[in-house]
Length: 203
Image (cartoon, rainbow, N blue to C red; front, side, top):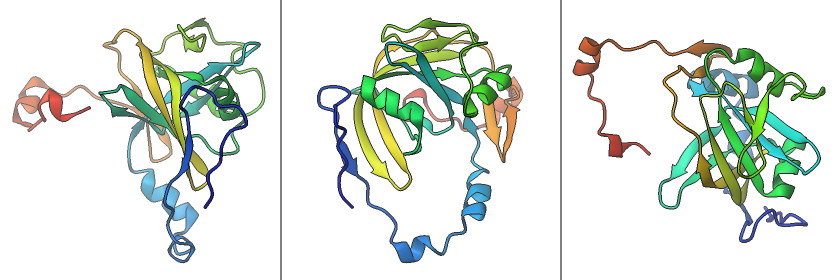
């Protein structure tokens, strides 16, 4: 598989490199519907990745967001190759990740849909990069584009963190088996029995 380079690099040093794919024979054995059902058992948070093209804000709901590295500080998300929002982010070289709170299901639905102006009913302020920070989000991560890797019908986008929002004690919005869900607090007695890892065991 060849390497795809953008006609205009979003940021200095950003590159696109291929990721090794599953062979066509083995991939054909995996039913797409079953794949989605099985992977849906992995509970994720919900974020909205936003950007600005200099004229208008853009954004889309995203489950495939994760921390990647502490040194340097890197995060990743995985947009579909057909995403029009991703094309804007790639061109600008900047984006922000808004981590949604438990009462932002409607926000998730707005940014998960195609079409209408997604920011018409959403209050936001600009991050240092100019990318929109959504009102009511748990926190935010502002980034510049570091690298892009091809991976099947998606890209794996790596961002370098340039600014961070304040932490929040509110509960996150989660997605599990095709439905929104939220966390439930663990009692102190139960927490004492659970072998949580040390803080530095997690990124």
